[in-house]
Length: 308
Image 1 (cartoon, rainbow, N blue to C red):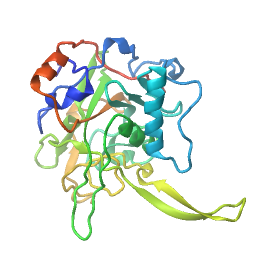
Image 2 (image 1 turned 30 degrees about the horizontal axis):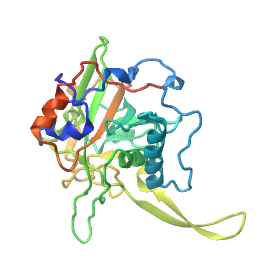
Image 3 (image 1 turned 60 degrees about the vertical axis):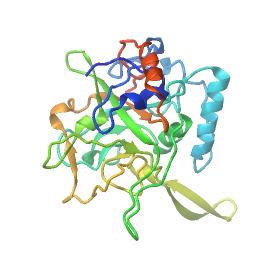
Image 4 (image 1 turned 180 degrees about the vertical axis):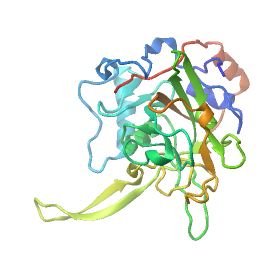
């Protein structure tokens, strides 16, 4: 379904039609982006700094990283930035988007996730992404998303909360044509065949805390570990460790999974897919503002700077 661009991320909620399939945004022509299936060297990313200036705390402080991203964008004027040269995650401060480059790793069978970290849970995820989960968390904070709370099961079930986040997917098919779909269209209910009808929410995962001894000083220290680094990045089954989860009860038991891959809609294994994470604004603008934004539409298909 090809439709006009909403230039500002603040307008996107007005074009996402509730639980149905809304309009998929395009990125502006002045982005000069490269298709993710291309062989372009990642070093050609003009927003990539010569040195990584993000805070390097151990463990990573996602709030400090988000603040630094905003500060750097204000100083440099560069609105799109790759967070770390080792990983395929970008932040677009102008459009309030987070862009990931993933790869199709599963096309059929039951699902616990839409996307996992590379080398973790590819057997139950459609896409795998070369990144660290905390970087995506920080990027979402930087573009205005608010982390809520992950799912709770005791003493009773409480669904994950946080900013609602839509996920748009872009790829190049075997004939060289650019394609785009909402990620929900790649997921269907077991036994119903119906497309996933709810957005993800930014639950924000959480931290495991360990006490460790510093070998140099012998002092005891507390170290935090971000739970989503186990792979639980964008989930369709509920996990307390999920960074993005569904706000509905969805079992993680293999015998009771609610969702499966919508095989007919998913491109071949190994296809590179640009994933655009779009936080929904709390207060959507009046339709007149959305219509004005739509008038600035362009027809260039979006992509991200690819890397092997």
